[in-house]
Image 1 (cartoon, rainbow, N blue to C red):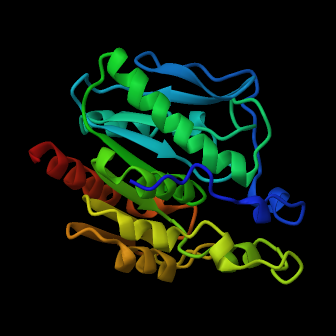
Image 2 (image 1 turned 45 degrees about the horizontal axis):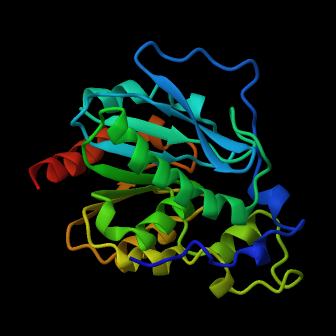
Length: 268
């Protein structure tokens, strides 16, 4: 286990980066919680909490702790959640500061520290709520940074890893978002280091990526897959898909791959 809670991400907490990396979207009026689900507020700092929504399938079912992409909020996944539940999976998407029902303002440092506090909360509170199945972590797009941070820190405590549209390298992504890397004197070693973090994980792993992703290219997904230390790993390319229509273009294959991963974990 690697203690990464003190890692320094201050090089990214600058005005040239933050408004391009984060687009917080509050949940106006708060959505209606699905009948079988429950909302959680997870404390991450004094006076700051992030929202989460648990969509349960069963007390012994595996749980997917899900970190979504930028511009998304927990409530956006209400329609997808029942498909996870039908697979016998508890689905637990979480927000970032300033997103959905969360308080506070998003920064890179806060996001990377908060995922540890979210993980600790889930590990402690889900069993108290009766949910004692294995825990997986999943990250989509920006959320891949949080998921891989946890994998690097707690590889033995996570039963599986799923990365959807994840980035291997921060520099090209920041450039695409309009950040001048020379202005901020950015070095990849001061970034998220996703491709390095995934080397630490040897559990069942699924990498999902769009064939024509114009934001995070397919080569990033391939780099994460190649670097992953797992013997049991799968790379799912969604043909004809772009960054934001993975589910539209490849829903059946997407859910089948998650089902296959979860079934492996159940057999262990």
